[in-house]
Length: 254
Image: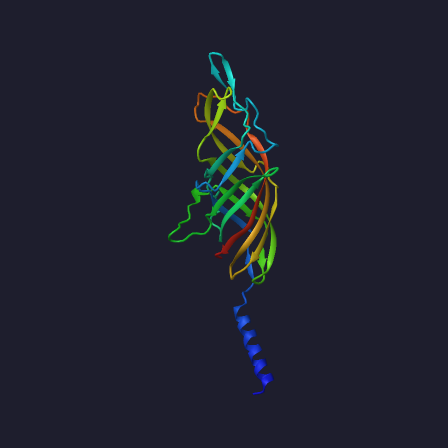
């Protein structure tokens, strides 16, 4: 065999080997992904940090004393509120074939928090699916088509449901620190539909990869006094937020 023939055969062998490793096109149908937010400290929001949403004096009502009603102090130093899921269930949607541990930064006029939720969609014998634990649902609004490893595609996404509650109540001071009350905090959304975002997905394996996401949403933050006889907050606060995810790993079990 000549040198040129040897080189040609070697090149053909490499080409056939590469073709054998080439992945078939991957299509993930549009659908819903469901998540569970654990009480592990990874999901939080800084209340009072946003200049767009100040918490003024008297926002949490006043405490009655012999000297009159002491108004709540303004929140001037941000309070970190750690959240966990307040389960709503999966709304009958059932499990999704996409597995992901989604951690996204929370933005208003700046970065003020983080939401980390475990994809409750994939399950097995050691991790049974529990629809009653679901607190977050996201809609993938179009089929995701990834023709080969290394391909990238962008699809629309939208938050269907978000239901969170503070792990521990926050402490609110009254009358310049003379008294205090504690409040549970809830975050519920979306307050309005049609807030579509995008998910840009890269395929790095046979049925896996990473994605970047950006999702606007309007969330209601409400407060409930731990004492039924205590003062109440003036009203819930509506926050225009954006969830931004970066290089989140995913795996398809279709």
